[in-house]
Amino acid sequence: MHETKQNKTMVAKQKERLLQFMQEGYTVNRINAIRELGIMELSARICELEKDGHEFTKDWIQQTNRFGENYKLRTYKR
Image (cartoon, rainbow, N blue to C red; front, top):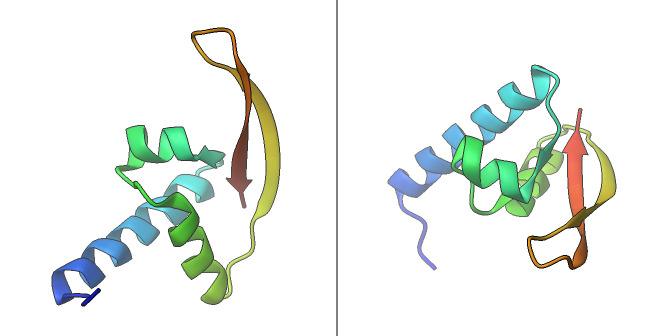
């Protein structure tokens, strides 16, 4: 896929929002990344930030969906 200048700018803004969110003490997961930060590809942003030298604590939390089914959710914090 050809990455445009607009896409690069969008990714840079997402990474900036993500770092700011985490610097404020919040833990991020794929659900709140979409809802609160507008980031659809959280794992990609985390990977890019790690390549940039940032370190994160990763954990799993167990959640229950509205149908009563359990699932694990990856969380990240600084």
